[in-house]
Length: 491
View (tube, rainbow, N blue to C red):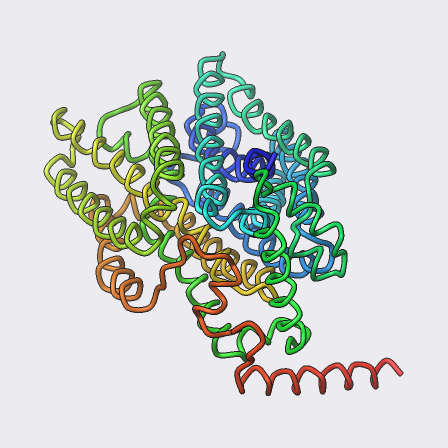
């Protein structure tokens, strides 16, 4: 089985990423429904629409952080299954909403589920992946986010052509319950992360799963060596890990790696990709593209990114690495947004059809460039740069704060910013990308392609196969003191 079992497990787990894309993308079509706007007595650029999207993102902040609480205790599989069950509840509440409060509660719960899934799935994928194809394996998460956007768009597009009734928006919101329920049931049969099994002393099961995921008929020695190195690393980290969240801020090497994991998520949000994803129908409307044509263009847009992502993760991510595509993506997206702003400034009344078409081209360019850089790499880099003992909590922090908290901010202010600032709004992203993102990636990010997660530990200097730094030794003593204090309090 080997490689096929590895990819199959990653793809099925990424149903949670599909939910991410679907539940985020479905609102693009929902807010374009006249019945939805009439039912909730609002407009597509109102603060109510911003609240519906930002509550989803706000819920995701807490969902991601909650994942850090349960992931190490209950494992990667159960964490993903938990997120799927919560997603079922959120989907039902949204589709059955009969007033704004119910819709907002449904969005918060769905966001909580997606936050939990968005931090746990890349960790699970990274820990089951073979080092040589880890970019592909974790990149599947971004691929399924894109597929979720595609499905949400075309479900919404089809529903939009129904008579002006609540079906236009209730059915798209209800559809998400199906993949969520499938994921919750299917996780029963997926293998647990071998690293989690080793950390919880289920060694025979861990080795069996390593073999199932990576055996190619002749690599018994590699599997034995991989098992031994994982165990050695986890044993070394466990020896110096204090309980709680503070340890990842106290050990300098781990603090640095947590910072990189968080920054790659922050930089992803500052590409502006989620603003386009949520509010592209408003952008097209400003270009004179209205009615069903508006949703059609949005549907095509949502297909372009996943296609580009599939090509990138299949053929290039594990060849080109992480750092160079991130630098390329930052520069290219900044150029595309500058061109978009320049064109829009010459077409504020949407009267020039040629300029409107060119503007759509540059919006599409952003999603293609994103899919060849930050899209798959943000999840891959975050999950692989963190050491095992803080991978759960670190991914929770990076996803919750770096991704979802920043996304909440943009989701809330973007409708008003697009309405008041128009094309000038794009320059906020351009300025940040040029002044912050490029220098930080160039000077501080390290290349991780092709290395095992344990070899990445060695590269960062946090764990050199048994040699612990003085700072880590100090934290081991601190951890022992904390444990003794807790035991004294219990007694």
